[in-house]
Length: 337
Ligand SMILES: Cc1cc2nc3c(=O)[nH]c(=O)nc-3n(C[C@H](O)[C@H](O)[C@H](O)COP(=O)(O)OP(=O)(O)OC[C@H]3O[C@@H](n4cnc5c(N)ncnc54)[C@H](O)[C@@H]3O)c2cc1C
Image (cartoon, rainbow, N blue to C red; front, side, top):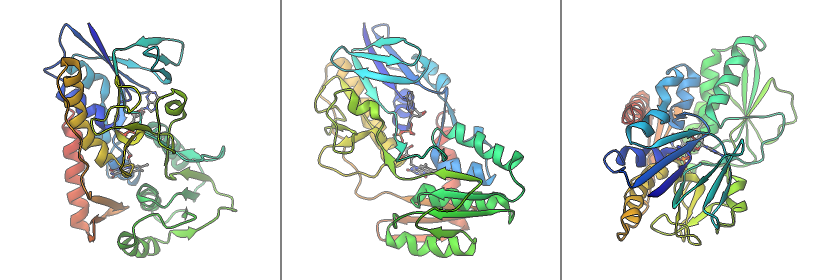
């Protein structure tokens, strides 16, 4: 019996489970571990905050997805990975042995201060947002730290949800978005009255932390070879360069020789190759190479049903872009229902 353990139910492992429906057999034991039985799709999170979607519209039922694939779902937090002993340690003391393990645990926001609210896990963030809106001050003053795509989308979604009641200020010490996107985003921020600051000396009712991705400490602590930022270094097969029975995809992986953005789009594409390679490693067959796309489509929602699209040097904006994004996002989540 071979045991394949999937750590984290991110985009890549959701794809793996969908492609494993006809693969799991008596000789293969597949286990998925995730801290929550649901996975919230980040692309729709700003839409949930703006009120365009209910939270379940943006969520994938991982427990059911695993069950449909013939896999076992274990709700729990991964604390430690020991690739030398081929063991995973979970919060609460349970341990899992594996023959092959695959990591899709995502990333965390860099430098979260004690007073700030992390946006990941999104389920906790939704609860804090609801609390602020329902029980907080009548006109809350909100800070959003980080002006990457996620930060600007959330600042605009919060402003839309407040409907003129309260204030949102965006903090960033540098311009993160590409210039071609920023020239479209900046006027929208101004139109919505979202202040843009470099430092945060003021008092706010809530500070939401959406700064750039940073690696989960357990990756480096595991002894797996990582890149300088602490992400698991993988080869083109999405296989750890130091431990051949460890695979990784999505934000927690770093493809050797490439500097890919930490974005769900890449995690999804890697998921398809990962699924195939996990099947092949179990069967002892030669594996496929993952070849990253040169550019990817970026869609930034602007609070109201209006969005900005860009791909390489091309960009566009309008209500039609929002409806396009809505169609793509809903279609993605529906694949796992
Ligand atoms: C507000 C916001 C909006 C975004 N919008 C977009 C977008 O529109 N398009 C895009 O491409 N990217 C977007 N991103 C970036 C995107 O969220 C990430 O790049 C993407 O989620 C990475 O996918 P992943 O599959 O690697 O991991 P994730 O989607 O983060 O999934 C990891 C899973 O592992 C679980 N997990 C983590 N740690 C543990 C642990 N210790 N034990 C057990 N389980 C654990 C988590 O709960 C989660 O379910 C956005 C980010 C933010 C913050």
